[in-house]
Structures are given as structure tokens and as C-alpha cells.
Length: 260
Image 1 (cartoon, rainbow, N blue to C red):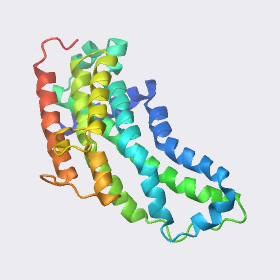
Image 2 (cartoon, one colour):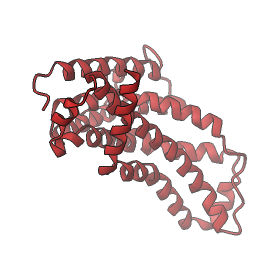
Image 3 (cartoon, helix red, strand yellow):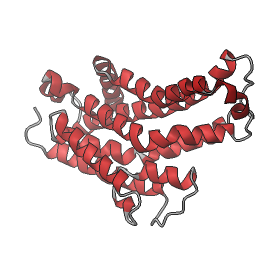
């Protein structure tokens, strides 16, 4: 099983090169930091004061993740999952995949692993882009000093891990939908409806029932210090939802009579 999974992951990783996932991951990671970087040119005179603020990194982190947690990351995940999952649908290649000597569990897990690697890479690239958006203006403008205080890489990586866990339900549910509906628009439309619902119900007492909302909830609790009544921490709920959706998705995939 381990050998089959390794071969499956490598195969899926090679097939990924035919899709737009690399451009999607890099574009999503750099979008907000690029806007922040360009906005520095509109306030050149104010940059010394901004960069001298002892809370410079915390402020930049909160500003960057506001749009990322609530909007860009969920959308990027929905697109990435659909693109990876439906490579075979685009090329009518499911029969070839199922004809290979590997169990269905390996096929299912290999695609899921590749998707998770891409989402993890997106979040790490976003953190790197945040750092570059901060240091480049200091390198360009002579009157701007480097940001006050060191880059808190350890703390930011811990938050990256938390956000990664928060979005796991989006990954697993979109994966389930993309395998179930073999058209590009149907799983994407359902995912967008769930995403819009998660934003619209952010003030609802039971917002944690929407599996696309945990990154936003985590962001508000940690970055904005907003207290919320939850049955457990967002990461714990997200991990539980991920397990349920992943198992359900595999059962539906394995029991589907028409796998072509």
C-alpha cells in the first residue's frame, strides 16, 4: 500500500503539470502582498513611521490575512481541488487510471496528498510573499529603514499550521464534490455557495456548522481577539470535519458503479 501510494502521488504530481495549479498557487499567494507592496508607493512619506512601529510585523500580518482567510484562500482551494481532481475527466482517462494495478484507496489518497501539498505550499508562499512585501520597500527607498524587530517566523509558521488545519474541511468536501460531479462548474458552484454562506453567517451563533468558515473564525479569534462561543477550537472542529468528509468521499468513490 505504501509503495502504491508513493507511486500514485508521483504520478499525480506529474499529471499536475498539465494544469494551471502552479500559476494558481503562486498567483493566490502573491496577490494580497503585491497589493500591499504597491500601496507603499502611495504613502512614501509615511513609510519611515510605518516601518518604525514596534508592531509593524503584527499589523502587516493582520492586514494580509484579512482578505486571505475570508476570501482568497477558500476560492484558491476550490479551484485547485477541482483542477487536480478532474484532470482525468478532462482527458477521459479514468479507465486508464482504474486499469493500473493499484487499489482504489491509493488512487483516492494520492490525489488528496497532492492537493494538500499544494495548499500547504500556497500558505507558505503567502508567508514568504508577506516578508518580501515588507523588505522590498526598505531596499528601494533610501529613507526607509528595515522593519522594526525581527521577522517572527516561528510564530507565523505556527499560525500557518493553524490556518492549514482550518481549511482542511474545504479541501475534503470539495474533493468529494469534484469526484461526485464530473463537471468543472457543479462542484465549484456548490463550494462558492457554501463559501458565501460562511461569510454571511459569520455573526451567527452556530456559524461553526458551516465547514468553510473555520479559517475566518480562527482569524477573528486570534488576530482580532474577538471572543466566540464554540464547542471546541476551530482547528479541532476542522480536523473532525476533514476526517468525516474524507471517509465519506472515499466510500462514495469506491462504491460508485460507473468509474469511467
